[in-house]
Length: 256
Picture 1: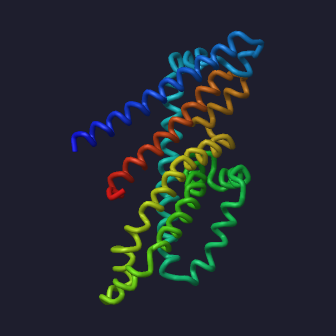
Picture 2: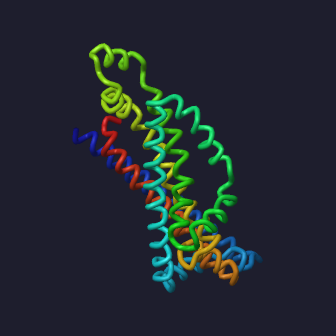
Picture 3: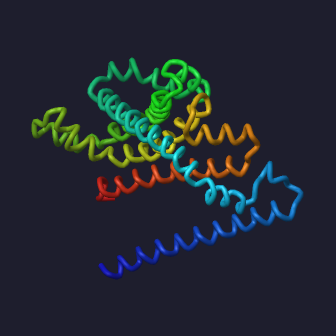
């Protein structure tokens, strides 16, 4: 057991070391290319300039990031919950699935930038429109993965449960749902990052705060270093959301 734990620890250290080395090489190369070429800082700022933004305007970035985190988190929770509930309804009613699934696919087929202005028009430029758009973009991957997971249960265990006179709800909670959890969490991890995208895109359309607002306003004033810093913050938020869902997955789907 100790040898296994040591092996896992060594593997994590190796992965972390590889990430640190590759990141260092990437940023040093980026800095060198920008510094020793004719590329204008207004087009591509060096990493040192972006780092200076974090040091001098950290509070500004943090306050706007907090706004985006709230919008994305609520949107993710609402969209994911709706996706799981609708997928559950599909399992119990084939008629409902045939009636509603095409609309879900059609909603996914519409570009997010086409939906965003409509959502902002309907729900205003406040936080609600950002939550709605984050929920919309989070909904589809959770729905699809949950439906596929719930339908992927082997027929033999289902037949066994039915032979014991198990109800449909018992088959669902004791068999289908545990069997589908890996697929559900795959959808949740995808949706967690998508929720950040939805919130940021909505902020582009109309907002007074948020990372999307920072990106839009800094681009307008040609503050490219601030734009890059905001993009990095947006990516970090998405990574953090993904990491949280992954940690929960390891606790819930412990048998994997």
